[in-house]
Image (cartoon, rainbow over all chains, first blue to last red; front, side, top):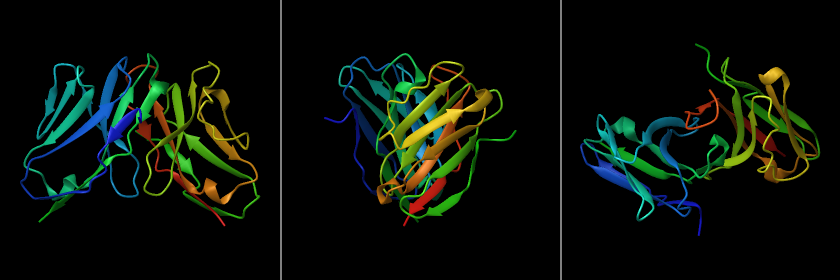
Length: 111
Length: 114
C-alpha cells in the first residue's frame, strides 16, 4: 500500500459545482497534513494546512479523519480557475523532510 | 520579496554528460529541498538540507546524483553520466526551518537527456 494515495481523476465538473477529494495515508503516526495545488507545468503552491478540527478558507474546506486515516478537500462553487492538480502531503515525522507527497488529483472545471 | 529561483530553466544534454542545476532559496530560509517530477508523476524527494546539519540524502536514486549547499544558501544538484531516465523537471523548495512550514518552490529546471 502506498504511503499516501489519491484518486488521480480527472474530475470534470461544471462551474458552480461542489467537488470533494479524499486522500488516504498509511502511517498512523502521521502528524500533519497539507493540500498543495499545482497548475499545469507550474510548481506546487500551498493551498491550505489541514488541522485536526477541520478548517475553512473561503470556498475551500479541509477535514482530517484520524480514525480512518484520510484527509479531504471540499471545493464549493467551483471556478474555472480552480482547474489544477491537488496534491495531498503528509508529514510522517517530526521533521519537515519526512513529507510524503501524493500523486495528485486532477480537477477540470468546465464552463 | 524574491522567491526561489532556479537555473537553467531548461537543459538539454546528451546521454553520458554531467549536468549541474542551481537553486537560490529565499533569503533566510534554512531548509532546502530537491525533488524531481517526471511527466504525469508525483513529486519524488531527492535530498534535504537543514542549516548546518548533515543533509538527508535518502532520496537520491543513485551515486550519480549529488548535491551541495554552500554557505547555507545556494545549492547545486549534480548529475553525472546522465541517462535518459534522468529526464524530468527538477524542483527546488525552501522553507523557514524544520517543522510544519510551507515549502516555497522554484519554477524548476526541465532536464532532457537525449
